[in-house]
Length: 269
Image 1 (tube, rainbow, N blue to C red):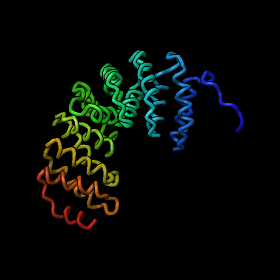
Image 2: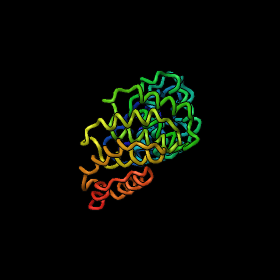
Image 3: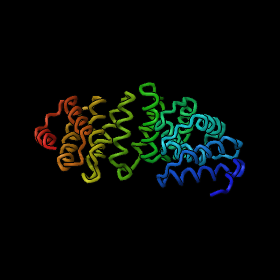
Image 4: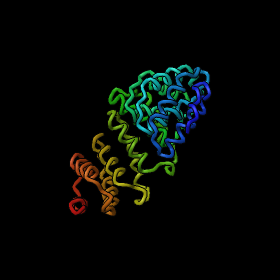
């Protein structure tokens, strides 16, 4: 309406993060509103923020693909001024994921998140948080990713009950480790066994293709896993897209996995 906009000082950090997240969750894009929320957030004193508000704000802007560099630089400084022990595993994973999604290479903040993660028991991370952390470091640092953090995350995966693992998160962790060149045969063997025990209906084409591609890229030969993934793929028809088919074919070639029924099925898709 004709009501004047509220001054930045009228908002609290929590109110700004709640508003931003509400629009993000509803999938409503409103760049002018987000620009105003950014100005309001940057006008606030750092002590008004909590790890939750920092994570929520970064997540909301990332979900809308809004790469607001002044805001992210401000939130990075705010986050790094906090006590690392105040951050929950989920906060660290959300922040890392937002940086990766927007391709904001903030080495100082990523290092802060890594150190904060390493200082807490690995049992506090669920599979989604592990996947987000691993993916962010793989995407932004590649083969230079912190080996201590990767080893910690691999250990956290092995501690999880198999029922807490789903195909997309397993694929994401494997793909991240393959990208970084991190070698952990025990983890690949562990996730292979877990994945083979999952119901075929839980898989989508992207998960299957990424799992196979990750094993091939990491040069881990696992004929039983490939046979299981082949059986899952052969239950799929129109859900297979060209990119997934290409990844599957490339993985089979790299792993020297000869599977005529799979090739026949893919040729018909």
